[in-house]
Amino acid sequence: MEIQVYLARWETAAPAVRAALEAQLPPERLERLGRAGGEKRLQAAAAYGLLRYGLRRLTGTPELPALSYGPHGKPAFLQASALQFSLSHTTGLAACAFSDAPVGVDVERIRPVPAARARRLGLPARPEDFFALWVERESRLKCRGDGALAGRRAVPARRGEVYCPLEAGKGYAAGLCAVCADPVRLVRLSLEELVKET
Image 1: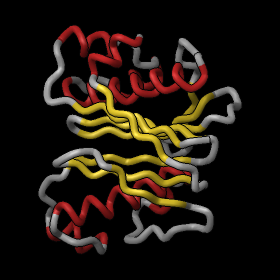
Image 2: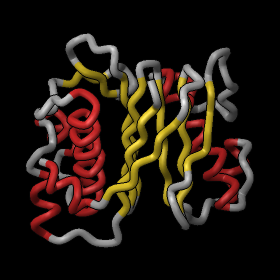
Image 3: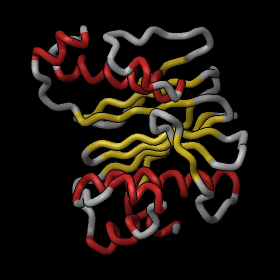
Image 4: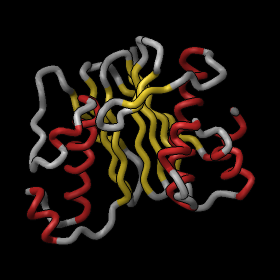
């Protein structure tokens, strides 16, 4: 199966678009968000909007099925499914990846990094370099569903894992890790397109 990666990027969101996306957040995700509002809620709503969009495209399923969450927060379909997915979001960007093998996607807005943090993690202090390595590290952890290594400086590749950086646009770093070497198809969408599809 071709790995499908859906990206949505925004500068601002019209109130009606924001409300339409947020209204479709799963109850368990709303609970986890608590009172978070503004950008954090929009980021999660966009990621789950991409999940619904991709699922509809790949399987024809009109509604988002029930989800479960692993011990480290990785979402999965509650009912067994051959289709696996990964979500990520940051300020102004959300991503959802689908594969028939374990998959992890990570996106980050490039921003200044405290030198002490870079040293502690053994990563370069230059923001572009730091986040290029950070998204690789995080996508590997998400692919494994394993937050146990989150405190480690390095997350070495495991046999069968394939990593590829994704082009997310200026000011962002994005990466994908999968336990397969299938080709990757990147689809860019606007928030308005996500709302139109729901």
